[in-house]
Length: 226
View 1 (cartoon, rainbow, N blue to C red):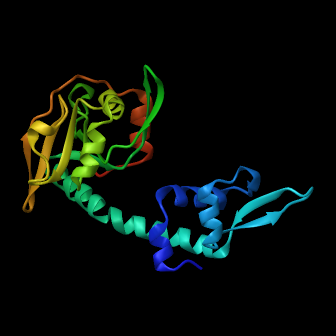
View 2: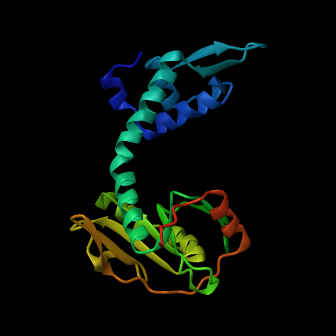
View 3: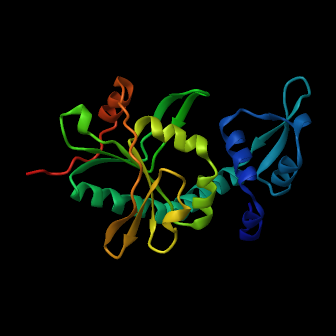
């Protein structure tokens, strides 16, 4: 079984490979690389001989335990992100907007189909399709994550298909308004509320039947308007 020191030496590539072995029957050892070597030396995968003398790798019980432990660590790492997204969603609900967290859409782009998953998606609560004003909020809790996202124009292009306005949301003081990509707005958490530090440029969009069905099948939170 891996020790804490060994776990700290494993990279995302190691865990990605472990997940592959967990899902797949086995991997051909003749195609092994240094990641497989490291996993085998740590006891997380093992060499087995299959019918016909073919040697393969498969995940071990310690490998499964370590993979489960990493999944739990990932949940803990993402807690600040999910917590901020939930607080933002509640604030938007107080503004009279319906919200969805971490909902996936499939959109058609010039480059083909693209899966997008905004941290928070919101609509105005109205029956008039022309006034639903769909917004996307990309939540960031670290500058590293923000800067990595800024470098992905393809992702924002996908958001632009389903949102009239795209915002970044972050703790106050982490992002300067002028750092946001052109057209994007910025919402900052300041104490127990949120403030719009930079308005987003509006571009009219019209959600299609597929997007509306997605919202129906994966219900969000609609504020009490009474």
